Length: 531
Image (tube, rainbow, N blue to C red):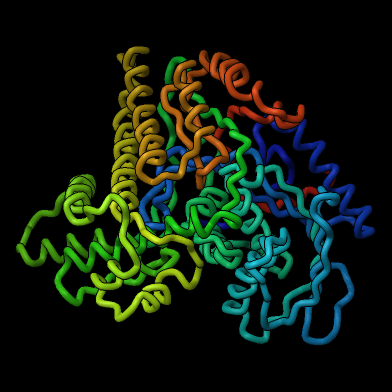
């Protein structure tokens, strides 16, 4: 699925028909506001969407495969390079937001050689700067160290709710990186290059991003979910859900509990990344031969549970002289048993206990290696629970993919019945429900509000309901037959949203039925393409 980011000349190239009226008004507002702010029209608009993850929660940063899809909500960035050059050796960024009362305009004169980002400050322009930094690093590799970036005028508008679990940060960073590439003369931008630089770039704002969000934002195709794998290299391929009667829909429901990864990272998201990495190191020290080093990989801290997985079975098969390998599913089943036998402390492990097993001289050496890059706050690390969730969730992804692939051929047969479809949907839904159970009880990344929303939706007709995104609030995704959508919506309004103080705009956007959308695009159509 690699290749260039598509060029769009009309909004029909980007959005489904049901979204065109709303998006046309929004884009007209963006272009008009750009002209009133900067005195001329933009040269192009960069666009990247948010995503909803169907299954594969909190396992991308352990380098296991996931199944997200792009949604309609997105970040759009209007761009011009027609502004005077600042002082020698620098370029200028003028950046504004459509929501200017909430996000103040900024102007930066930036040295050619570096882009400074203070990740300790929660500043909205840092997300643009992180995409800028990553894009410029790639451009320097392509054009040499003497490359001189162009100055840019930027106007941004985003509809992915911040802290909603739909990856607003990845949409912003990816759209920013794409905008910088295009502004600096890259007529074609490779999807894989854009994804890989966006993954690394988002870590500059203090988030241990795994890669699922950026992959979904860039690679997605209309009408399909996206199966994303990270090893041995980043790959993405479209996956279709078989047609059923009634049609299966993805319903996204907001909890209106904000889950900001930047703010709560030290005790939530970033802590989970560290715990998974420590679990990999601990299992390696306990189960592999002494002195075994895990391979360096693309995970946030350089080693991963997936790296342990591959190393363990490579060594096991070599020592036993095995001639046939177990399937990945069988390997994951075995790893679950080994984890439960090896990591026995439900209460978690102290720094001293982990350092001793890893053969590190002191806890300060442990912190230097595992917690200094993204500070975390914890007295004990729940290695057992985190590894169990990762291995079991990776197994659920494979089971769901197997269901989809085996049912695709049979669904086209004339012998396919509604009963068969209902059985398939129930089995798909059961996997999503298992994910929610694991997120709540094992990975501890759900919250009371999400649990309540899932229970309400299931009671009203959802086959499967779970949190999506980082968790601790945000959004939930529900597998709902088309004839039950209204029932689920009504139940959520009656039993959940009616009890909250919401604006009319919030109430209207609380529950949406989303079809899989396309990924990143460069729009060159101007106002003429908005009709």
